[in-house]
Image 1 (tube, rainbow, N blue to C red):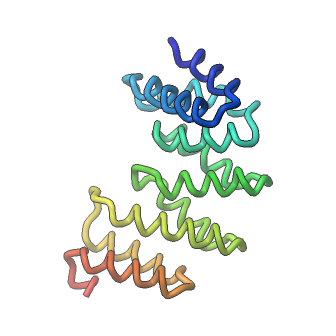
Image 2 (cartoon, rainbow, N blue to C red; image 1 turned 60 degrees about the vertical axis):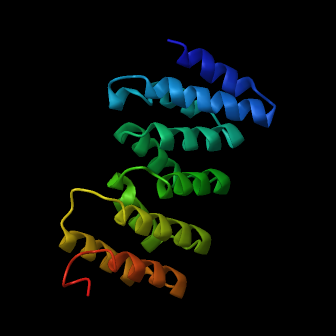
Length: 173
């Protein structure tokens, strides 16, 4: 396929505009793969030898590609010793398209000592809880409750209350 060549081009780009276009092309090529779990394979293959800005951009690409293998790779980078990569991984999880990243985000929000990552992960969790899904209203209320016990700032507590107002449940009231 063309994906490995696009990835090679992406990794070699020094111009940020070209790199951004190459990243978009990689994501689009990966999305064409029918089997969701195989979509991220080319990106995952180059991740071990990728560092710095390229790794940050590939984490964002994995977010767009999705799937459990991509999610696992992003989650692994939330434990990186490189602060920029760790933040990029948490940001990617916070913007994940599926609720599958919610548990990881809540875990980060509860355990991190970094205030920026705590806020970022909790806001991402709250956003994911608000996405439509196959959950009952009671389950959604429980998830918001977990966020409420984790929230430290009034800003996140207000987001949670706003989310609860959309939950059609007596428990939300």
